[in-house]
Length: 349
Image (cartoon, rainbow, N blue to C red; front, side, top):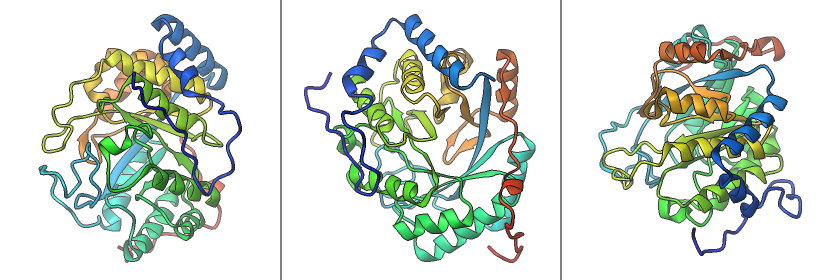
């Protein structure tokens, strides 16, 4: 355990957090340190109380623009600071994006998530992102975007375009953050989350474990998430996939049961959130994934690619869910809930 004090960072533009903290690090650590079966039992109790149907949310993810990012995140192959085999690409055209969205819907995805590399969107690209949100929303899918840091007016424009969720992960604990990233600070991330909340967009926010952090630092990340007011509606928990050419390429794999413990603790402290198994899920194998569902995971990324890392095949996922007796959440007709959405102009790229 680290001897450094763990400070709770507060975003400058959100509602004041309750005092004292709802979930201090010490109490989260106590959950982590429970006997495994006791922790799983508690997590399953919370999960059944909040999600009695036992359904799993299916999310599909596409990279709108890949590579050439000026940030230096130590885990990411898209950074210009790292020597990886990721080739920068221009933004996908609208037809390609919509074809992927239609395919995701056909395969049963509830939400279409769209990511673009970069520190923050420029004005020209941002105008395209707004058109993309409107077009994907018109297909009847929930929409999520991750575009880096946002200005207040950008968050408001995304809301007006119909964006349902914005993803902006904290990645790790405040005291370990500078070990992983130096080009932006923790407060930058929290400020973006505050702007997203202020605009009325739901928050998708989690982190990555297995980057060399201690259990206390994992607990500190979860404390940050649970003490946001309110906590995120969606909490992706990523298992580091070490990628050649990044500073973390030789990171020793995390004990998979620690990943299961992290899912269980997240479920207990954020009882109504969709807790998502994200990157690294395919490497864990079916047995560990089954334990994660038992621990309270009820959301997965679904499809062959997660931005630049491989993911489980959709058919394999459906076979696993069937084997476990789990069913996808029923698809939501977003267009029916959002009347007046414009039809897509096929000349907009």
